[in-house]
Length: 270
Image (cartoon, rainbow, N blue to C red; front, side):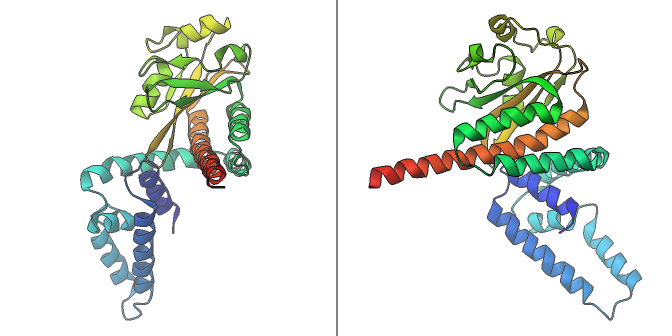
């Protein structure tokens, strides 16, 4: 499977548009088609290229298979392909060292199923990934729609524990509702900025970066980093790295919650 197919499949799966089983079925079909094409010894190279181009029509093979199987529609596929192209351009701009760091950190946070440890590791490494002075992980309360601060880091972090932000309020609320990251150079002059948090901590937010956290079909919350250590603004590269990191973090949180639930049920059954 090439990187384009891998990214397209991961995007569709992470957004809850297709299931893991549907993706596996489509990827298997893609493999069979590629194998059949490679075995057509009676067709010269030029004819094979023409055949594949006619089949493609601007849509990658995996996308075509998903369409043919009825797993997605063209209305859904078009914006996802645009998102894929943008992410591919951004990925090419990332240094291999930074990308390797995010992947390595992903393995670390997914190496434990203790929820407290997972949350602590996420906050520790969110700062490292973006060179931020402080970070906050806000989990979504599914009953109220509020975002709840969990394991914040930085000055006066203790004052933020269990603080709740109403649905749609602030930059974090906007990100949670729209499922898009926000990059702000001057937070104090952004109309979405929620200054109550600065009032509680006595600190001053200058720049911030906030990304959504989602696992499969479920919205988990948002991850936000505040003020870079060198007092510079966060960049699109920071946004891409934190988005990649948040995807891994969301999976780690879901796994830890599932494990805790299974342990609790096991205790009841005994």
